[in-house]
Length: 95
Image (cartoon, rainbow, N blue to C red; front, top):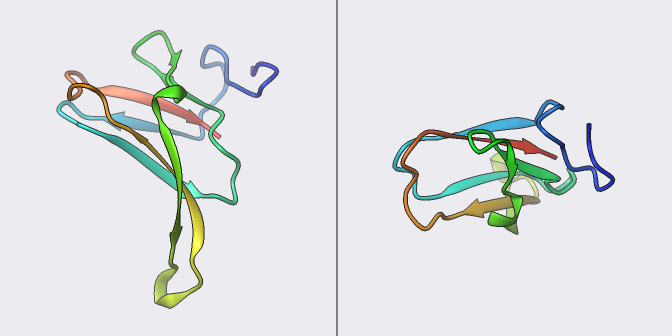
């Protein structure tokens, strides 16, 4: 189920992918081609599936294809916590 803005509610739909963040990580970064829409939601599974998308900064970078193919834009999402992660975390990403 999603709300009026297309944001996942309560983890009731399958995420596009899940990020497993190891203990001691100092940054979370994920990227994908900008031909897909922007992230709708990032849910912190261990904290009652709470929304954490606002913690991420989105930038766009051009990534050149293998063999010199024309570069295409990628959306890059980055989050740097105040302190390294002290437990394993799982972020569920919905695009």
